[in-house]
Structures are given as C-alpha cells and as structure tokens.
Image (tube, rainbow over all chains, first blue to last red; front, side):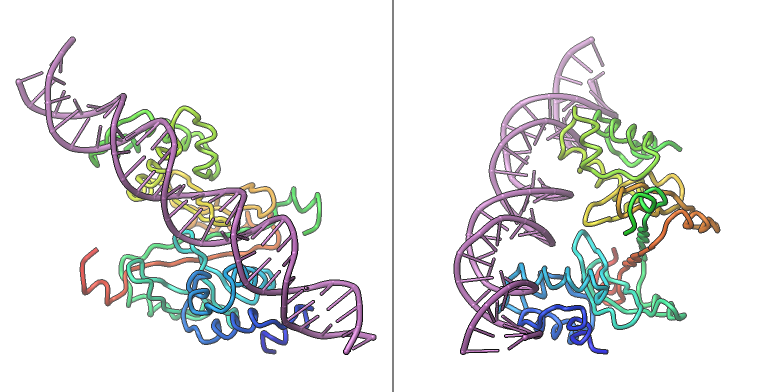
Amino acid sequence: MSISTKLAKLGYKFTKPRLQVLNYLEKEKSLISARNLHKKIKAIDRASVYRTLNLLEKEHLVNVEIIEKEKLYCLADHPHHHIICRKCGYAEEFDCDKNEFKKFYNFSNIHHQLTLTGICNKCNTITNE
Amino acid sequence: MSISTKLAKLGYKFTKPRLQVLNYLEKEKSLISARNLHKKIKAIDRASVYRTLNLLEKEHLVNVEIIEKEKLYCLADHPHHHIICRKCGYAEEFDCDKNEFKKFYNFSNIHHQLTLTGICNKCNTITNE
DNA sequence: ATCTGAATTGCGAATAGTTCGCAATATGAT
DNA sequence: ATCATATTGCGAACTATTCGCAATTCAGAT
C-alpha cells in the first residue's frame, strides 16, 4: 500500500505540501533534513515541511536518525539504518535484519549511538499510552 | 585513572567549573542534560557548562544520548547504554556487552534509534582525521 | 610568593532548528 | 456548489547551544 493511501486511510487530507514532501522523500536515496527538504521545495512553507514530517513520524511512515541535533528523515518503506560520514554527510544504507555489515568496511573510525526509549512500569500503570 | 587526572594529562587546566561539572556527573546515577546540570550548579555560567561538556565529549570522557534533540550525558567510566521512559524520563542502564536485556521487561512499547557515523573512503583519502 | 602568558571564564548577543497563533485557504463529504 | 473542518502560510516566539570579547584564573618559571 502506498504511503499516500495510508495517509488517506488515517484520515489526513491530500494537500500540495504533503504530496511534495512525499515526492521528495521518495526521490531521495539517502537521508534528508527538514532544512534541506525545505530548500528543495521552496514553494511550500518551512512550517508545513516540519508539520508534514512530524505527521509522518507520528504515523511511523518515516524513520528518523539524529546527527548533531539535526533530524534526518527517510521513508520507512523497509527496516534499515544508515552509516553516515562525519565529514561530508555521505550515507550508506544497511538492512538491519541482514548481515550487510561488510558495507562498514567503506568507513573508518566508526562511532555509534544507540538510543532506546519505552514506557516504564510506573508510567504504564498510571495511564495507558 | 580518575577523570581529573586524565584531563590534566591532556593539558587542560583544573578550574572550578570543570571540577563542579565532574562532581555532579559523578553523583548523577542517570543521564543528565546540560540544562539540568546548569540548574544544579547555579554558580557557574551556562556557556561554561556547555564548554566543559563539549570538552569531555571530545575527549570521550562522557557518553551522549540524544532524546528529542536534547543531549543527555553520563560519565564514560564503563561501556553502557540507557533505556529511557518516553513519559517521565526515568532511565535504566544496561551494559552493552552483557545479556542484561531482561531489564527491558520493565519497559513496554520500546522504540530505538541506532546511529552510526564514520569517515567514508573518499574523506579518508583527502585528509587523515 | 610572585609574575606572566596562555587558557578559561562570564556575560550578553547571536544562531539554528523547530514550533506556535491565527487569519486565510483548500479539501472532501454531502 | 456548499460547508464544516483540516491545513496552510506568515511572522513571531521558543529552546538549545554557541560565539566574541574583555576580565579573570591557572600553572609553571623565577
């Protein structure tokens, strides 16, 4: 099912800004920030880019990685991660289920950050999320 | 070797702000943000808290996790990660080498973010980092 | 103990990424 | 085509963090 269809099913309207953002995300082979997305789609407002990305994030239709406080987005069409060059920003994708770690050999000096969040027992007792 | 000793070895001066930040990081059992660190150490300037944390990060003396654009710090005395409640911020530690994942059962609805950075071949050719 | 040059601080202003309030507009169900 | 509602664009606002620079503090030499 296409992302557009999913959005429609979820009751969201089909607007120009949303279509444009989706188009660009589909074209984009790598990760992209809200800032750069907005640069590419000058016709639509900065706030709308952010609002659309937040919406997509909330509905789990995009994946997010944070590099230096900047959120980078990609379509969540399949489960994967990226390894990103700290100098030039070049990113390679790796499937998080398969043994594609050989790709890492294209990079040196690897750092990683693993962030896990959840709902703790106490909060879970108070209200269901 | 204590972190203070390490700092001295690296040629950094031994100043009140740095000592205070280190003291608080040692006391802190969980993760803490620059903002909250500054709240606790009112005597020293915000900028100095940030500068000290950046220094510690550069020298790999603290570990960092980013939650909602905010950097959270802890001393890098041993390799570990945290799982953090998305509602209240409560954090539990887990050793990243051992099978302590059972701790996860205290949390539900787990999300994760894995960020890998490195230096790509091209950048590595241009200059050594 | 004091001097001295360099490192570091505090301050306030600046920056960057992101969000908000609200009037104007576009959407899709009827 | 109409209408209620969701969504947009705009600019102002907010938050985390950094910067420039003069004043201060540190550590090593005297």
